[in-house]
Image (tube, rainbow, N blue to C red; front, side, top):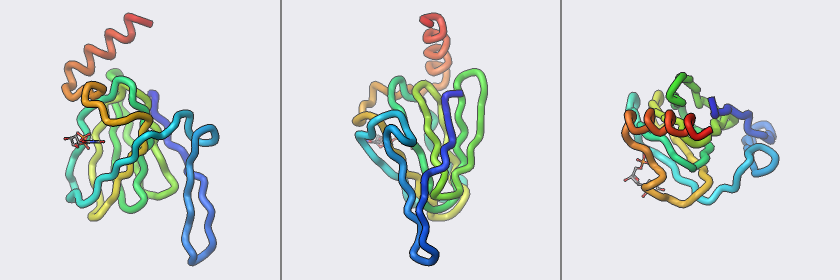
Length: 138
Ligand code: TYD
């Protein structure tokens, strides 16, 4: 599975809080071109339901609890983002679903490219066909 949960490097000073950081070369392999975040989703909201052809992403939850289910067309895995020190790197061609588990949870996504709708695969059957096609080309 082309996904990896990383421990985000963090610096703490007791009650002064925790500073967490990831950067290209040390923690992730790609440049970040765009950052977006999702706030205000109700508990048990499900989002996502798509894959990307080329886009690489880092997902993290600075506050709250969010489950991320990833699927490469052959197996599924579930990750719990419940700490600002956890980040999930998702490589291309992975179907994902995110489920909000706590009120006011925040999902931040840092990604490798600008928004391009034609990079999305939003239909699961098309995703499966795309995975099989990619395997044939290997
Ligand atoms: P989408 O990626 O489908 O969100 P999710 O998978 O979490 O449900 O995006 C939701 C909407 O926001 C969609 O209409 C496209 C728009 N959008 C942008 O215009 N720019 C962006 O960078 C992103 C991520 C989404």
